[in-house]
Picture 1 (cartoon, rainbow, N blue to C red):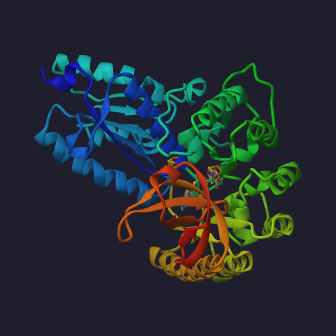
Picture 2 (picture 1 turned 60 degrees about the vertical axis):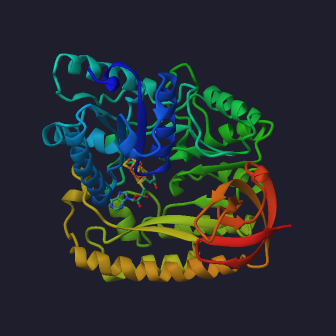
Length: 453
Ligand code: SAH
Ligand code: SF4
Ligand code: F3S
């Protein structure tokens, strides 16, 4: 029997997708540490490889399929390697994986990460009997989706905090409700406890995570907790000693209440950057997407936010080429983008997800048409991003330093401004985890460069 079968070894986690997945990989890391596993310096050094997967678009799913091909070859050269696949692709495609990737040892869904050790034990027991059949657990069980206190936070100073997961919105294009399950909120005392502990270790910023954070508090994983509102939770977090910055992602425009708007615009600790996915600028397409707001509502929300927070930095997600999207619908999106002037836009070509409502809608566009519209929109957004970035030149920004930047000619420090821009500058290592003022002297679209003042 090889070593990897009888004792913990080195692990490597490869994460795909959104911050929720990255945050869950921090929890998985904590679970593995607790069992005595140590991190491998690279994937080829690992005894245990875990892919934490995404399936939000076909491009995301294809990346996983490509990686599985690589892992199959690694396994052929090293049969004692243990391979696990978890997260959203695993949730959606468990049967596919069992059929087409039998070299995968275990599969766990989006609600099953806390059962990882049981799965690993089963893999070991089966191997001892020369049984290599894949073990799996993809049951959606609400009670065990959140942190159990073992998270290994990967950033100094900034911590991701899951506050809810799942989604009940069923936007017609989206697979997330199917793979993440019903919307469920994490008990507020767990959230407050986790953040309070982190501040004692010097953490100054938290990023609250959920598919739709604005609707936090409707139903809890702990059935004894009474319904609460997202602003109610924010008020409690603001009171925690040591917390200097709060961000949250993602906000659904339809759930951005007046109460949240008042808190967002008046509270210093809540950062002046907001990710507010619009998806389309056409009312007809928004309706087909089941987004439950109009472009007028969205633009009015932006105006109300900006009137109270001058300099608010907005980012968004947009889908181009939704079924039935006409040239006029597309031009409505272009118009909205030029009006709002997002500092950053994440723009995607519509991708058919099996089982979603949009799959069955008439008027699917050709890939060529979708690509061409996407290219056009991205060119417009790139120009806006560059111009908005240039506006930071000469300004002094408060930056939370989160580590080194090794990419540009040598070693520099890097951090984020209140408005969520990456800022690079020189300084001693002791500044990591601290707030500093940086005067910006040059800019690129996504990065600002400056000097500590
Ligand atoms: N909960 C978030 C986003 C989740 S998915 C929200 O409500 O905004 C992240 C982004 O992926 C979405 O905002 C959307 O722009 C994009 N997306 C989701 N499904 C898609 C699909 N089928 N094709 C293309 N893009 C998609
Ligand atoms: Fe998907 Fe819509 Fe839910 Fe966001 S709100 S996760 S886009 S269904
Ligand atoms: Fe992808 Fe799942 Fe996030 S599908 S975007 S990893 S919720």
